[in-house]
Image (cartoon, rainbow, N blue to C red; front, side, top):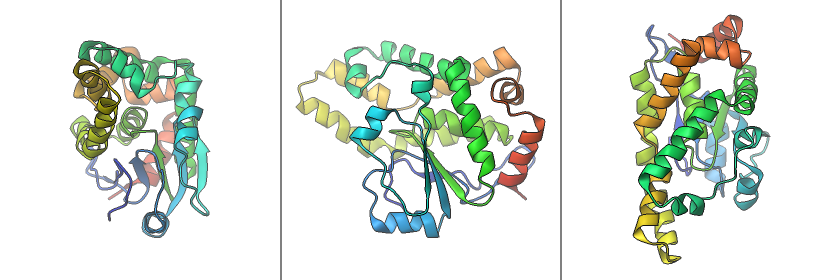
Length: 253
């Protein structure tokens, strides 16, 4: 079922280590929900049974490109970077880093903060409770591009649903295909504004995800906590009882 949303997908159908599948039409991820046409809005509600939107973006991102309100769908803003007291970074800021290595270093730091920063842990505690609270409808969670904040949130959910890492990487890296057209358009806009090729290369790096970013996240979780389950229990107030409930709600034979 096609919808006019960049980097949109349903996590349903992914198998876990026990052979169970993530239920369809329950966990949806995407880029921002901007200027949705009526057909897409209807599809989200009628086909996917969308009942809740979780928007990870900062105030300035929302002000620049607000989500399209969808009737009878709850909208929640959960500003992860704000909770982390992170510096607001625009795409132009990434271009000013002027090297792919600098962008990679910055992005690795972002993924580290998404796991270890106390504000991020507070945000993901809220996120997991919102997911657990939606017993019957679908939740769509998103940021601007649907790649880092959303990518890590998706990886976290899939880890806790006991999905093989190979499948989690597959979901994570689909972003690079799904965002290609939008990224090409953004890069062209900055080229027309006078950014040089070195800056555009840095920007292009920031617009995509790399396996190494998720490698770093997984390594940190295992190094610091031993497992995703221990991390969730220790940092996200998401112990064995909530974990069992999550799997009962979102997995099916």
